[in-house]
Image (cartoon, rainbow, N blue to C red; front, side, top):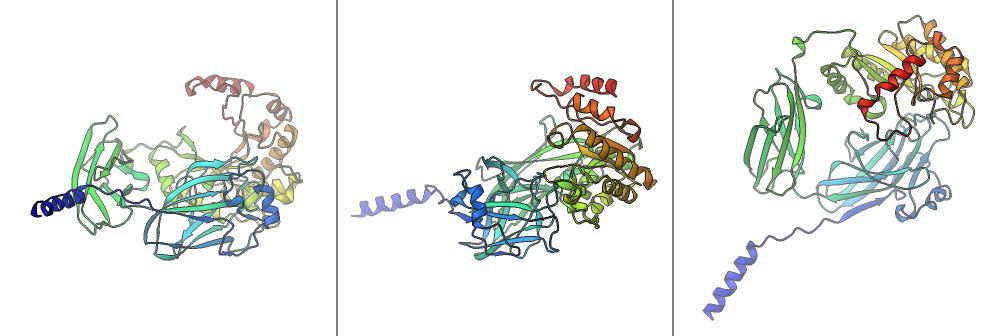
Length: 495
């Protein structure tokens, strides 16, 4: 009998030593049409069904949809709330099937969790991981940053404050939200410098974040390597229960690009992040006429509260000229009213960083154009808007009127001479503003062809200071970037 008791006791110990796989957390799916609150009237079911019948991939064969009749939005925007029950508190993954981001046909949107602050949902924080194939491709699946939920009732809210770039109207689609409880693990690595860009003189710290505070002991291994893969710092630390994050200090580092790798408990799921060290700005020579510029599109891609950090990164990279977005369709959505307040913040950030801006706009408000068209037919309104915009930003901004008119931004709906007329009217507005703004024609997508020839035959050269082209190569899928100078030669000879 004693032998059997000993054997049972040994088996029990062995069973305790065998790791038990954690049960997978249940998926919380909230259907878009199952909203708790909407401050505006959503699109009705019969209208939604016109989209639902186009594919079988839409969850529950229904979705949520906001559409505004015009570009006049309520002061609080369009809001929709989803209240649901979480089985336990902690960090959760969040995926959404919703309107495409950075798309001129869909309105930008924000998200908040419970009583938190609204934050813009942009490609900087949302990774596209799939889509539903519909004729208009209106549903993209995005993986967002993890969110922290309370046990029990929680609310996730979406808000649309601005209409789409195309015409200022609200177009917003949401098929579903999906959340999964995360186990304890590493979630991200941050550094104590905006965009992880340090000057040599800066004190440098790196912080490793977890899904939640440690409940038990964990082992953290980290390594910092330079551009060539040589290790400059490594560590192996024990995290005691109660640790919220782990921060370590970097040694003095020479200029360069560095990779930080961290892994917990040898789980084979390492995280990587990057940081850079650049020359102290105080030691640099300053070149006012630097040839380096960047197409930032911050108005579409960078949340307004982050643009100051991006402007700093541009400056530290040696960039002093940025191409931005100034959508007339949004600014003058209501006839007789020009609202530059959002774009003032972007321009102020660039000005503070000593960066001049090329303001590009490729939308016109609905009240200046015919249905189905893109360019304004009210050239006096185009003149007045250009004059107003130049007077507002002329001290630090140039103006580019439209984008790639030789392709679908315009060419599929209006002729080249119509673009030429719009460019001339806008140019006169800028000149009459009496500012230092330079005038750029729209960037041409492809090497000059019939469209560009017709634009130039309309005698637009005296009305612009910048001949603008993008160097795309139609059909040359194998052409490498280094092979593009012939495009420059062609455009230069053409102009």
